[in-house]
Length: 248
Ligand code: ADP
Image (cartoon, rainbow, N blue to C red):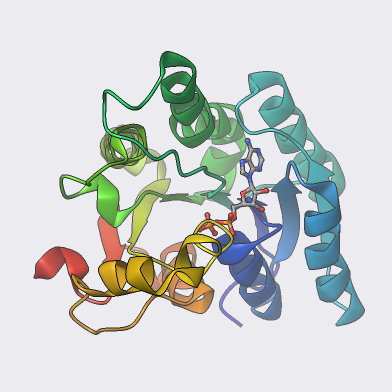
């Protein structure tokens, strides 16, 4: 197994990419600290893992609150004694160009999508240094290209890519790696409502070279590669998982 005896914190583990990654990492031998502010959702992820005889715990936390982030890092260490993998994945989609985005929505996107990554890495770093761990953060194709009509989403995701590179170069000597995944449009809770409208779905599909939307498993498989020793010489990378969208 690729993650035998590793301990992984995964945020946004109640749905979409985070849920798929929690299930896959546990199949590969990792103990999972599954974090989400939706306790019912994250508990169901954890129940599914524990039913198969693997180990996981659920923690309710809002990743935009530094005290709650500090707490789930502590819970991980208290429960499993170490942290090998930190997957900063929880996020929100905030639509709107700059005129349509009010200041409170802008600040919310920065808090949930971007500041949360800073908090997670800051509090987990002392433990990641001990294990020569791997940090993975969910950015977006929207953080690479000029993303239309979602200025705060695109900006926060671009910020994650820069933050990832800075962490990667600062901690490479210590053996800690940091990479970002840049999903295109995926079939997750974030897009569920929008995809019911065939016109919107068509619009999402149009720029994707492979002409299919992403599955949660597409991101989970990329995260597994970045979490495992298979990627031991890769750090500071922003990996598009987007069916060729950003390459077209
Ligand atoms: P995606 O997988 O595309 O990111 P989803 O909406 O399916 O989209 O999953 C996002 C997950 O992140 C949800 O389970 C949601 O409850 C969680 N989440 C969103 N905001 C926060 C937050 N501030 N703190 C913790 N979890 C959050």
